[in-house]
Length: 73
Image (tube, rainbow, N blue to C red):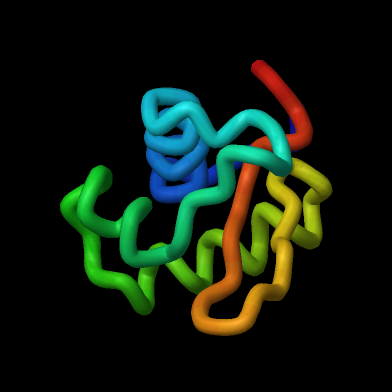
């Protein structure tokens, strides 16, 4: 897997724990922020970086975008 900073690694672990490993089990940035106990802005920035590294996939939806892991460590 790509080199991840500590916040990105925390988010990957949270997504695993939340079961967001396929497109049928999306989690929002709010869900992830609550699980990580980190500010939503920090989580959102890290999700953008993870998306660029092809670790997570962002799915645009009507209200809030959903995220899931596309690479398993």
